[in-house]
Length: 293
Image (cartoon, rainbow, N blue to C red; front, side, top):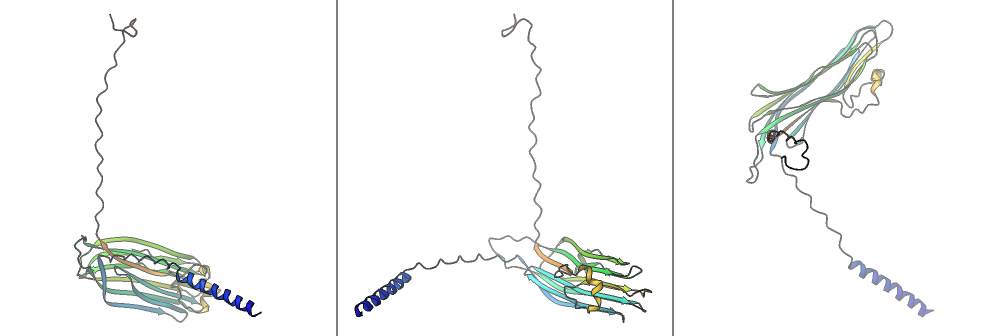
């Protein structure tokens, strides 16, 4: 009995020693390749002072929700500006109206990257693109209006306009509903480094509902992912409840890049001149396959 226990213990120790030895000789895990560094852009947008204001206006039978301006530097050479908000109005025995005004003045500068001996950097250019996404809704067939004013962004240098972009306005009334998803641009203009610029951007929303005889009417302009309006406005917002709201608002993307000239037109070589056709030789009758006599 003692010998069997000793033999079993010896086998267990041998197995453990073998596993430890094999693990100590195991190949090390392969090293992950080092990430390739991304080259820095040749120009950077440096944000300076900013003046931003959202002004809500509403009567007793109305409400405004959300309402903010956000400036985000998504990349060293790109800035995204968001304007978002909502306005809703209703009427029973009195007219209802709501509005929201947006205005932004953002100063910035274009800063070149440190020069490199092996890289030739071209002069900069500014590129603007704009989107507007939201809903306009009315419920009463005899009245009511919801409106999205033009969304505009303009770049100025010392008060002189250099580049402007505008998104078209939209209006609904009389029980109409509209999903707005517009894009404009990109538009571009040459720029210069180390010069002060100002981005001026405006946007506006409004909803108006005159008093009705039969039943209350509603009107709403919703351009905010989460306006947090009261449940009172669910009937007018219902047509587009299932639409994703995460991109709602007026968005402007400002980007600075190298002003690369368009490729030169490739000239096609002239067609090779072919020799003029030669007249065919007439064969003498009765002389087939030989010279004429």
